[in-house]
Image (cartoon, rainbow, N blue to C red; front, side):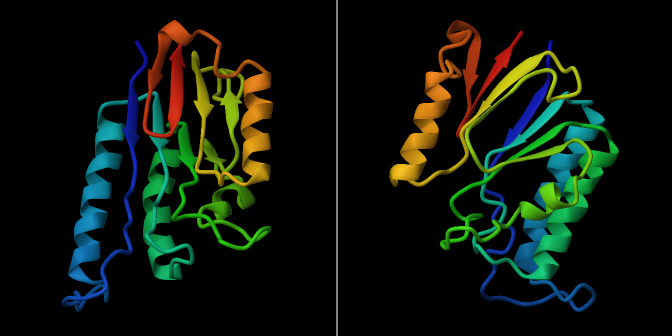
Length: 180
């Protein structure tokens, strides 16, 4: 049996008001979000999950402050150090509105963080992509429905990505996971 931990919509920078913690300088509301995120990461490590899938929207803002990026990064690095393959699907709040600009989770690809896969395009990941883990993941991150987005979906469906092992597929918010 494969253990998958799935979560989405962390929006860790959603505090626009309220008091700030004098030690960290962060709004107390953000600390609440980070504590919940710590609980998720702790559970993944303690339960020895085989795969973590984050289905987008780490932040509410497409241009999060470096402080929020640092705090998110600490949690993702814990998963990496625990050798848990982690899929980060890019959500609509993570995307830049300008074509060609980096999205809010781009640094994990740029830095080639071990075990962390950032999925900003539709993709089929196989055991080869996931260090031998016997699972296939059809990732459908947020994409615009402009012509380019429709063409990307068509290319993926033309390859049969969405038809493979349909009976054994588990559907999540923005992805399809298939257990072998």
